Length: 317
Image 1 (cartoon, rainbow, N blue to C red):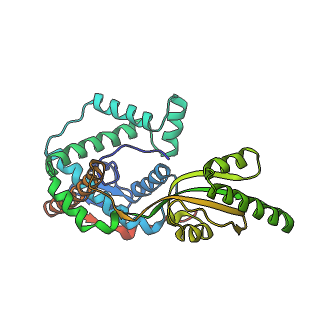
Image 2: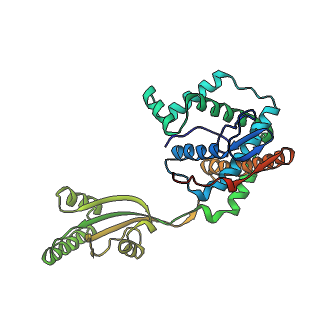
Image 3: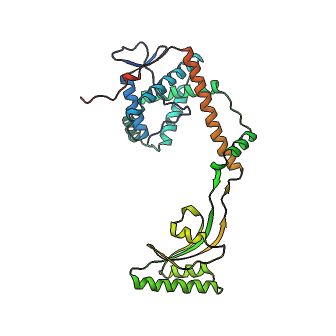
């Protein structure tokens, strides 16, 4: 998947100058900026190449609105007299190549072909993206978020931050091929359990069996209880920490295990890591809310026309 780095929530696109000859229907107009049917179909191809999958027609109407939103932002960037230097565009091209791990010119040319772009077209898109981002920095401004606000959100959404019950187990599985071997492995598992209950170290005994090639398993560390297979989970639920199960059978073989510890389900604590996660979520929501308000206000000021009904999948020739 090829990614063009953007900060804004809208897809980047290049408006056709008003002086261009109009030979087909106009799908989007914002003041003197227009996008024709051909522009929008090209945009679908480019976005499909960027996403690594075709864009379904069900998303066409949303693409038209995104296009209108972005042309509004480009218009505002022009009003603010935002000028983007060639050096800034060069840096953006370099960043694009690095983010997609493109080192050779041949690979870069292939990427441009896949996206239906020339280098000139790519540079124009990146220039517009930088201009839009800069305009949004001015229009949206800083979004301060306090620790108190983050803690309040954590309290409101405690259910979303529940940690599941976890168990630490040592588990041994003895495979068998037939009924006779099944009985032998059951007997082996019973002897191992008895040796551990008589003072042996269960984990050591399991490791020895695995090393001899008779079984698989070992210390599995701490796992979410719900992630265990149903038959294993049922046995673990009945054990107290330190207890060793009786042997039991599944399609995988004969099992025996020891529960070392159990950690009850709980809410994630309000750590610095969680604060950062909450901050990113809150910032994204507030940013997009302000972004929507900015664009809606611009649409009240500008002449904005959209005709999504013109933008339909191309008919086979």
